Image 1 (cartoon, rainbow, N blue to C red):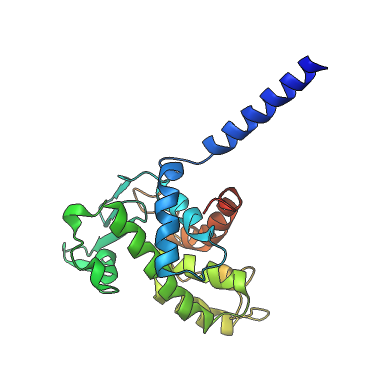
Image 2 (image 1 turned 60 degrees about the vertical axis):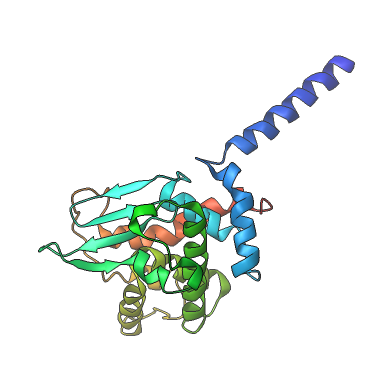
Length: 221
């Protein structure tokens, strides 16, 4: 009996360690810092697992994650990007836009774009702003967070275009994401070099991919 109990204890310990190891990159080390950031800048966020799941989708929790293609550069945990036109001019700069959200981000630049404290503040504030916008457009709570995720990935303009397409599509509810707005795709369906999928597929599937990662973060922050 004692031997059986010993093996059961070992199995439980193994499972406990394995559960902790399920988190990718530097997630386990950085989650307390993210939790403190949420407490400070978005304390009423529900579910809290939404942000760490989105970070995993963006960067795999690798602090120095980098996306580099001919059209854009993405940096850090939240993959804030700068996109360029064909002539090399800047089409949009997500880091510069985030910097305007709060005085504490004023010193953030592309030179230190990987800085964790800036990334966490920018991620939380940009998603909080998206949540405010989406709550005015979308009905159900899960769909609001899906809208937040879609904006983070494809921009607010994408949501506006999806709503317009949905409003003229029979059976489509423009106040719901899942099964409705997610099926209305304004982005290109042509694959671009450097990306595994076309932009239509990436943006449409992005919220569901974030939601699929949320369970592992429940109760962790």
